Length: 270
Image (cartoon, rainbow, N blue to C red; front, top):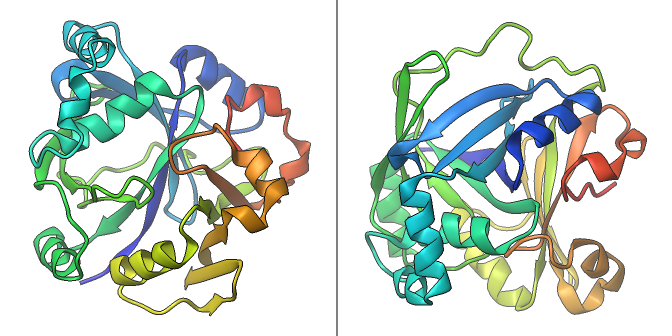
């Protein structure tokens, strides 16, 4: 039973423009497709280390308009702690409320049922496990299982895709030299509690921690949790960029070479 970092979700209001802008910054963008029930669609930036960046937008479909009406009427809030609809609230409330930028990230689990049971036993309350899917541009479909903690700043989890998806040739090659996502950065208002929750979620002790920073390592990847009140510069950088105040670090390339106005709120921590 393994659990490891998978991908980052970045909400964008204008997906075609975001794809053009990311391509202008040297990223290879692959069209993902339309999610189950037609509420959202995505494009994907795959990396050689197996991680990826998901550019997600709400569509102008009937179901998406229904969710916007629920949100406007305040009824959507009733879904927040729903076992059945909590995942939908998590994703789409953030997509409606947040400006362009990173709003979530995901862990991949090889045995979703065993992982679900273990995490629940650790005292982290989870939504029901649900089936999700996406219709790809070529008409084929891919599906997976997923679930999420009710704690807003913890990542959600998914199973492998079924059937296993093969990537287009050169999908992971980027002219800017980026090879992968090296770290996720998160500000914690309750630093001690966040470290405890991550320890339970990842089933391991932090590899480093002091009174201001906790680091969990996974090979070359790092989860970095900061005490918000001790990091005013980082807090200013990430403030307003998503529920969890997430930033990320890339491996390879030159992160200082990007035109930030073309990255749609993506916060790169150097």
